[in-house]
Image 1 (cartoon, rainbow, N blue to C red):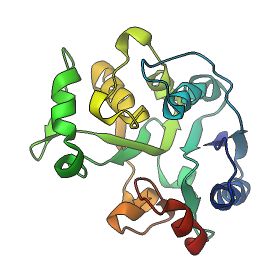
Image 2: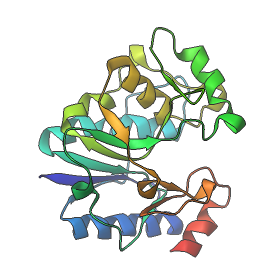
Image 3: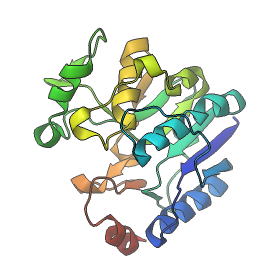
Length: 220
């Protein structure tokens, strides 16, 4: 299997440096090529809202081309720290499917995702689970070449949450999954352990916490 780890970290502040170094060690450990985006390479404007997070979405479109070269690509956000004893994720999941965290219902009470999705879903057959619209977290994605087009940014299909405009990738990627029927499965919390929910796992994700810098330093 030809494999790569894709890490987007534009600003190597000390805290993000800890995360990137853990990703670098992990790529070497599992025998994967490390592809590190240190500055924007895709200047295409993809959103009516001008924010760095939307530049990250445009950058993630690189997965379409990378998956022409690699069988699987592990895409890791800049605020993810990988434990040194984490097993090989490429050997843990079979080829043919993309794996991403299903966080349906996790934030609905606070951020009202259901209302946001109701506004934008239009003709998309957006399924529900346990009474909430399904929703995926893009912090860690194990992308398979058979679903490479999932990450294509199509302007006429672009959706975002107007009231939650810092959430850039998730609404669009989730909508693409259901609009086109891409084959994805839940990667599980052990591979995307959210510090916000006091979870623990192989990959620690420091999203949505106000004291992110301090927590990363403390953990590292």
